[in-house]
Length: 203
Image (cartoon, rainbow, N blue to C red; front, side):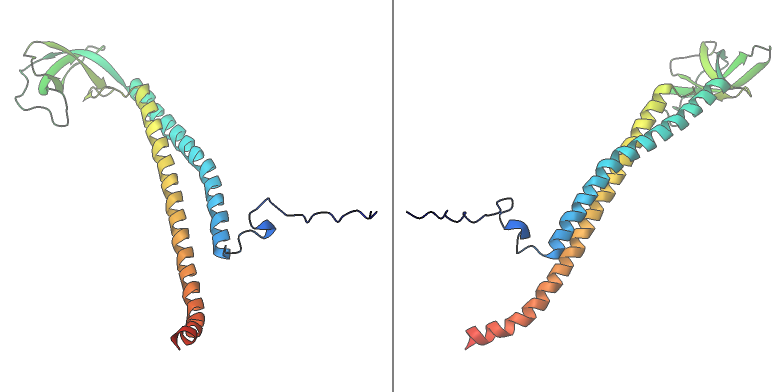
């Protein structure tokens, strides 16, 4: 009986189907595309939320300042219609409103008149609540804080969509550029191999 130990079995690297060298058919452009795609995904993973939050908070804060300014500069008064509402609906209004002349008295006793949008069923002599600014001009109601929140969400969504679209466009452009390079390499290699095949199989 031999006292020598049998040689150890050959070690095979099973971590990759092609060993440590990777897929021998993978071209440098394939590896470049893989790494650049991974980098783009990392950038999008961080860029999309960052862009959404930055744009959303910026627009929300800006709109909220506008809301606060309007609330400070506008107030409601009770006015009386001095004429029946006009027949034509007010432009830009989605409701059944009509334009009519109204008169109201400010806190300082000043009597003012103006054109306001009132319900189509109103008539001369009716009282309505309207919004006026510091100069005594009829204006729209101030925006609400909910409008600031909605604008913030909208801006955040648009920013996220823009960044994602840019990322997808960059990925598509990268793939097109690499495909062109691969096709050019394939054609160059074929020009070298094709004459040999023609001589071998063409007789």
